[in-house]
Picture 1 (cartoon, rainbow, N blue to C red):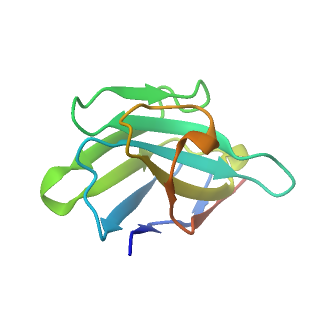
Picture 2: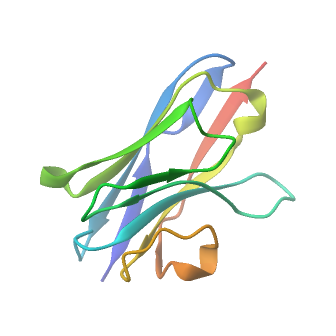
Length: 124
């Protein structure tokens, strides 16, 4: 059974940092495109950042550029999202997703596997 499990969320003050982790079990990320998405209450799920596991190419939403960094740990089959200079508007449930086709897509429906999400709350 394929599972993606996120961790690292929490409550942080504005300007603070968090590092989110996404670990896959039941499969490896080899060849995948892996994305981080976020969804605030009453809002649609939005793309935050993505990485091609094979090439290491990364893509960021405008809201994440310069503040967030997505990277991979091959040995641990893990994709991480380092979030710095957090703002209250970053508050959301953050989920990781894997696309076995390898591409990085802005649309959630391009991804086959999803984690349950981890809550990130940024206080002002």
